[in-house]
Length: 247
Image (cartoon, rainbow, N blue to C red; front, side):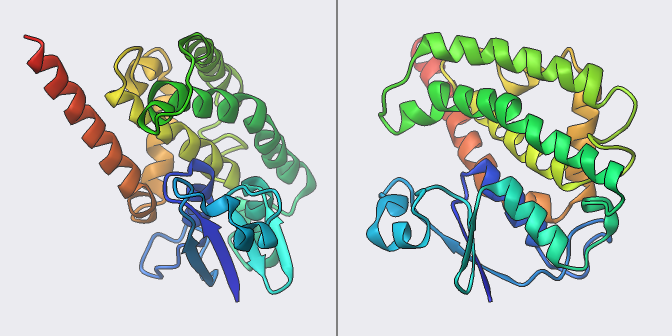
């Protein structure tokens, strides 16, 4: 049996969860019938730092896939492994070498661009503040600039000639990127700076791509992102109440 150790507010973990959702009544364009037992780890309460978790994954990070004595960290590697070892539609991780190379290229580009700036921005503007951890407005502004450059690269390179990152069909790279970018909905509750919609406004191709990925993976997309959007809505409501109290 495979165990997927994750946390619902981890954008990388959500991409793996979306990959393994197995409602057979859903659209055919998804990774299906991957039997995984999902186990939640509470980061806020030190779950990844516990001796029990470190015994499984000494890196103390999420997500992590455990299959008997085999343990695999890192979301991109988990997605590749699941797509390779299970019989899934070829478009998720194509067997043809050049098509697979394009998916791998998008997965590799993710870490130093989408992941770096989206995670950094959401941390310094929202998550870190909510957890009463040290944050830096200077770093937040750097990540805003980084996100604008990242969106521009997505618009002008990755999505310039195709509706998805690696071609005309959705792949695991699209799942990983969009789950990361979706995390920026938390900016709706930030006390300053642009929201996700404001950041996306100059980039119509990116907007269309994110919408298409979500629609193509429903109802799983809504299922795995429901808690995130609930948290984002609460933050937005708190922001509105705070602004009204100042009037």
